[in-house]
Image (cartoon, rainbow, N blue to C red; front, side, top):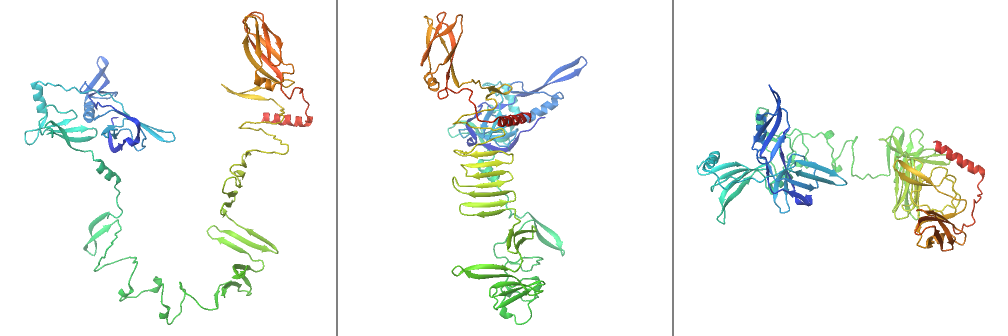
Length: 621
């Protein structure tokens, strides 16, 4: 599939690519020729035929296509022969809107813009987006002969087109025309753009090609096009029609019209209208049906007779001692600032809403509920009570059917949902409480105890003080360091865990009946067949050399070694031959525990049996 390059007018400035992120080949790439080798069946069998279009010099494109013909290859060459660009590699921020096959307008560090195709495009996202664009092609310098034979000059002159005046030639292509005259025109292909160059005399008296125009828009014009936004105030359709009463009308469709200055309409037919301000003095005839309109701010002095029925009254003051509103079951009486609801069947007062003075004449709003009545704040939308108060005898109760309750103070808040209860206070090391379906958390941000719905409990504190015995029946995982200030008793193995090629392996600790510590080293006897091995000072701090310690030897050559003498700071080794290499291991009793041997604990046999049974069940699970 042969795809055409597309120019989306996409530009990349130096601010968008990395330092030294642009590598540009100063030799422009231009296709010399295209070739394709296809198998062709003949009487003698299958043979390979190579079709060639264009020149066999310069950069070549080699296609693989089993159904290619010479005419198809010529068509392809005509479409791509004028493509030219500078090969490049660009490491930049990237843009997902850009695709492979788009032309890129790049600006190098010198501020020179140039266009080149995005032939290879890789986007990478690792916390941020980066991209690599490139067109890695091999360029070759174009060969320009300094001398052209007369016959070749005649052929080139015939190939050029003479302009209307008959004096100048018109050229096209990407190669600079040879032997131009002043006023000659060159239609040059530059990437996806077409440029017009004229051979002109310069200010210094020399002649050179000067570009006069290009299909590439200037940066200022391109920015205005990119940032232009159609306005909602543009009339979408204006046309003439014969729609109404046989007359030619001007019809405006699909837009709102906003006239901001004085406008006069001599004769209008307005089928439906909303008028913000209307002077009633302009109404000189007709009838206004009051059932179709709402009238506000009406001067009541102009109402002299009649009955007001089913009306809305706003912004008025009604004077009088009592106002009664009668309903089917209850009546409401407003008297002296109090509102009372009375049951019509027996005249009993059910509710009374009023104010009273308490606490040094401060006002208090009260609602009296008679007998066993109740008070509800009800939502018709959800068909639930926001709040419900009731009393049976001397027992008061309150309920709320809420999805969320939030009480907020200056530095704390209390919230409740059907699945969560939470108390929050601001500031460091302030107490907080949260209990919900996902677990609980008690304490501050620095010190807290939490648990999740998987049964795990987490305690975070600078120090955890437990003043009684702790029994942990299940597996315990300690992620940090563990320091034991007292004795450590273990029922089961004490292992070190090692990562191996096929998993985590355990090595049990080597233990003796008494509390011994060991050290290992290598040495070599001298010419006199002896060597003194000093006991390392730090090691002598942890073992008691006042007690007898043991040394084990192993030679690494022919001969044997033995301990000649021992003291508190060193031991002497004797060998059967001079210069005998060997290894030694020393074991001494740990300071403070010199007399410990198979110490008996106070744990009962039943407790040990219970622990072992629990461990056995866990291993089976």
